[in-house]
Amino acid sequence: MADARRLGPVLRGWLQETLPAAGNARRLGVLTLIQSLGLGVFLTSSAVFFTQTIGISAQRVGMALSVAGLCGLLCTVPIGRLADRHGAGRVLTANFLLAAVGFTAYCAVDSFAGFLAVACGIAVLETSAGALQASLTDALVGEEERVRVSAQMRSLFNLGFLGGAVLAGAAIAADTSTVLYATVLTDAALQLVSVAVLLTMRGTPVSATEEPPQSEEAAGVLRSSALRDVRYVAIALVCGALELYQPLLTVGLPLWIVTRTDAPALMVSGLLILDTVLVLLFQVMVSKGARTPAGAARMLRWAGWSLGASCLVFALSAGHGGLLDSAALLGGALVLVLGELCQASAGWGLAFGLAPADRQGEYQAVFSLGRGLQQFAGPWLMTSLIVGAAATGWVVLAVLFALLGLAGPPLVRGLEKARARTEPVAL
View 1 (cartoon, rainbow, N blue to C red):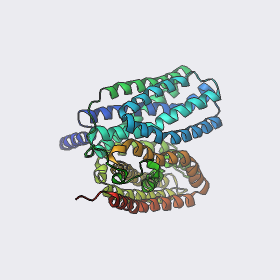
View 2 (cartoon, rainbow, N blue to C red):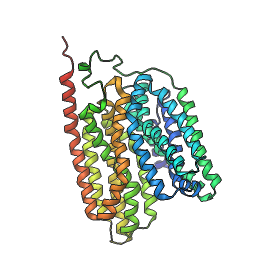
View 3 (spheres, one colour):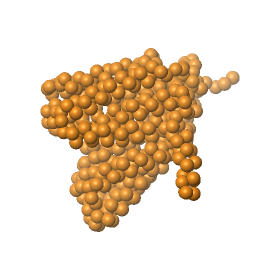
View 4 (cartoon, rainbow, N blue to C red):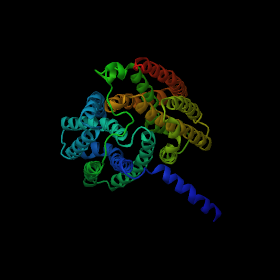
């Protein structure tokens, strides 16, 4: 009874931290839940839908999705510029409307060419949506709250994604093409619901700096393209490379468990569920240390060290019996979650804090390029290192993560010094 009384205040405190405040922040949270629910439904069931319902071979699906991912990378920055010119809300609304059309079009695909065309269109929309939503978050909640709200949205994203995966699992278990078509149309419908939520949002940008810089020198960056802000691009690539923990979790680690360890195959889903729950519980709390670029840079270093340490622990999980291998996998997963929480928090602090206030759309798009490259190359890299090179591959990954973490702080300091040199001197 006493434990229950103590648990109540703890739970209420967690809910207050995790649930966005009333107003636009809460609407952004609802939008995240809707989008993550749809993503969970679609990603979990898409491979079965593409291969068994549409009838595309697994090899062709993989090739098409790689081409689609490249299309998404190429289009993200131009779409970010549109957001700066016309407003992130308007562009995101168009994005969701087109996504509804795209998911519906999957149900009419009857050839590889049609599948490739739809996949490329969906990839462009999905890749740009994250940057657009980040730009919208900055515009609606302001500088003081944008990292906190982003952390809250990530917690809610995990909750929605988990729910979507459960629904998709039930659809796959039904083993009928009608149900699989229904999952795709459900995702299309959720895009329209997202549009309805967007239309309820009110307000104008409340950033501390609303006036555009008076000159290119005052802005401290070349106005022609954010891609020419080399230090910012380098930081984006470092953050994106640290996100290799995602294909590690979803591709490398499952293959490692079933081919190299004595742990039960159930550990694959168990570790993914554990990761999802821990991110849901602790992301907002960890993000408090990343609300300035300096704090985010320090957190990026911790992310690299933690992710590197997790790889060394995972390397110990091969061939020692089911109990010991499972214990090593669990320990590695706990250390990896710490690195994941730090990396995500650092990414928000740096993406927002180092971007010019009047160019958040374009700069958020540039920051997302690092994530896109990881999504493009990550599965191949994980398969090659973890499955192909075994323990040596884990050590290589550990060194890579540690070096990336160490590179973060000096890159951030260099960018801040470069910006300071270009700021006008007050008279």
